[in-house]
Length: 366
Image 1: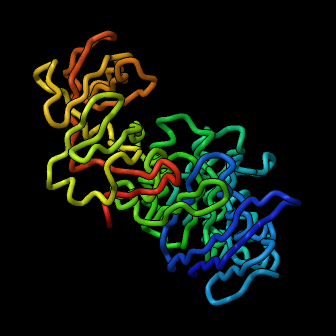
Image 2: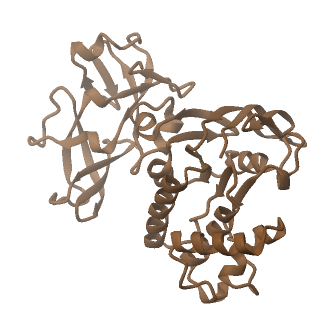
C-alpha cells in the first residue's frame, strides 16, 4: 500500500489539453473517486497513474518514488477496466492466478492467494468455470480478484460497474466498499455516476473540462458546493438553479418577489440590482398549505410532471410564462396532477447564491 501524489499534472494530445493543473495527495489506504461528466479527463488521470499514458508535464509519486519514467509493469499498481478483460479459455482460478504466474510466484503461494481471494469474493464455488459460464457480476468479481491477488500498492478502477444492471450494480458497489475496508489498499475509482461517488468515496475529486472543480468528503461537497457545476452534478434530482435579481429585501424571480429575512440578508455580499443565480435542492422545497400564498419565501408554479416513487414523489414544476423548471422532492402520499397550480415554500437557510458569470458560489460563506 502507498500514498499517491500528483503535482501539476498536464496531459496534452497535439493541441488538445485533456487535463491541466491536476494536483492532489491521496493518503495511504484511502478510497478516492474521480467523478465528472464524459470527457472531463478522469480516465486520462487514471491511465496516467497506471503508466498507460505519459504526462506532458508535472510529477507523479507512488509512495515516495517518482514514477514519471517508470513503465506500467514496474509501478506495482493493479487496474480493473470497464470490460473486465478476462481470458475466455482460462478458468476462474487461472484468471485470478495469471498475474502471479507472469511474475513467477511459486505454485504454493499462487494457490493460497487464489483460494483466499476467491473466498473473500464469494467465488470459491466457481473456480473451475470459464468466463462464459458466469454472470456479469461474477465476471466483474473475477477481474477484481485478479487485481487483488497481486497485492498491489495501488488499486485503480475505471468505471468497473457500468456494464451491470441496476440491482447488481448496487450489490457489487456494497461488496467493493466492504472489500476496501478489509484490505485497506489505496484505491482510485473513476465514474460518471454521482451515486457511486457519494457512497464509495472517502474523498471525491470533481472534474470538469480537464480541471479540478472541488475536492472533499462527499457530504461536505454536497452541503457546500464550490460552484454551479458541482452543485448540479452531485445530487439526484440535481440542485435547482433560478436566475434572479437582488432587490435589497429579496430576490426577483421571474417577476415574483422571494423575500429574504434580515438574518439572511445581512450575510449576502451583493448589491441591489445585481443579477445572481439562486440554488435550492429539491428536498428543501415544500408546498404551502394556502395554494395562493406567496408570503415570504413562496413561489407560484404549475405542475408539469409527477413521478410517484413509493416512498417519495418527484414533481417538475414551471414558473408562469417561463422556461425555468424546478425539481421538487415530496412525500410519497402526495396526490398531484399535471396542470395543478401550487405555492412552493423554499427553505431560505438552504439557499445558495452563485455568480452567473463565473458560476462560483457567492453565499453561504465557508
